[in-house]
Image 1 (cartoon, rainbow, N blue to C red):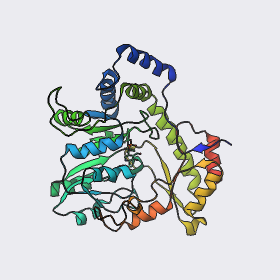
Image 2: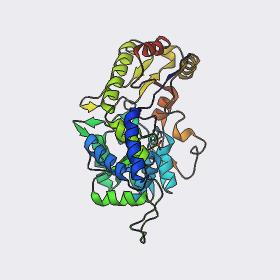
Image 3: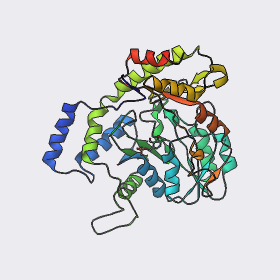
Length: 366
Ligand SMILES: Cc1ncc(COP(=O)(O)O)c(C=O)c1O
C-alpha cells in the first residue's frame, strides 16, 4: 500500500539539472567556491532579501562555524525543543548549553525566562524559529543588548519566512539555514549562514575552508564544510519552484486547520499576522483526556495505516541519555517543552500531497 510520507523532497526538473551538470562537466570545477556556488549565494541573497549568504555543506556545520566565528566562550542559552543539531553545535564548540523553557503558544524559546538564566559566563543566545515560526526577536534582542550577548538564530526551518515583508533571517548577529532534503527548500544536504557584513562573510568563508587566507597563509582553525558545485546547481534549479511549493503547502495547512478546528483535544498553530509562513511542518498537539487517545496511540494508528507522521521533536533534547543529567549542560525547568514534546505529531505536508491523501490522514484522526 502507498505510504503517505511527512514530506517529500523538492526536486528540480531533471532536464534543467542536466543542463547545469553538462556545464559543470565542461568547467571541470567541482568544489572550492565554484561558479555555481557563487551564483547560488547571490541568488539566495536576492530571493531571501538578505545581504550576505555563506553556503555550507549542511546546517549543523554552519551552526558550529557560526559559534566559532563569533569566538564564543562560556554558556549559550538555548531551547531543548529542537533537533539535536542545535545543542550539539554548542557542545562541539566546548561551550555549555543552558536549556531554558519554551512558550506554550509558539514552542519557541521564552524570552521571559532567559534573564533568570544569565550568569557572568553567558556569551550568547541561540533561539530556534521552530517550524519556521518567528521568535520574539525584539524581546530577545533587548535582553542581548542589555547583557552584551550575541544572538545566533537557528533558522533551519525558516527558509523564506518574512515578518512585515522583511526576512527574519536578518535578525540577530547570524542566522543559520538547513537545506537538508527534508526541508522545504533543499540542496540534498546543505546549509548557509546569513550575516550582515562583508568582513563576517569573509571569515565564514575561511572557516568552512580549513581557515586558509591564501595558499600559504592560515589564520583560523577551520573545517571542511564547503558546498560542492553539483549541490549548488541542484539548489539553483529548484529556486524557481519554491514559491509554488509553499503555496501548495499553505493549501494543505488550510484543509487541516478547517477540519481539525472542531476536533476536541487537538490544537495546532495558527498563522501569525504580518508573517509570510513557509508551512514546512504541520504540528498538532494532542490532549489525551479530551481527545480520547494518547499521542503515541494516534501515532501508531497513523503508521499502521501507512501515514508516516513524525514526532518532531521527541524526545526532548534534555531527555536524551547524552544530555540528561549531563554535567556539561545547565538545565532549567522544561515543563512546557516536555509537555509539547510528549504530545506533538507532525502531519504530512508537502508540495505534492494530493487532496485524497490529506483526507486519508484526516479520516484516521477525526
Ligand atoms: C532545528 C534544526 N537545526 C539544525 C538542523 C541541522 O541541519 P542539517 O541537517 O542540515 O545539518 C536541523 C536539521 O534537520 C534542524 O531541524
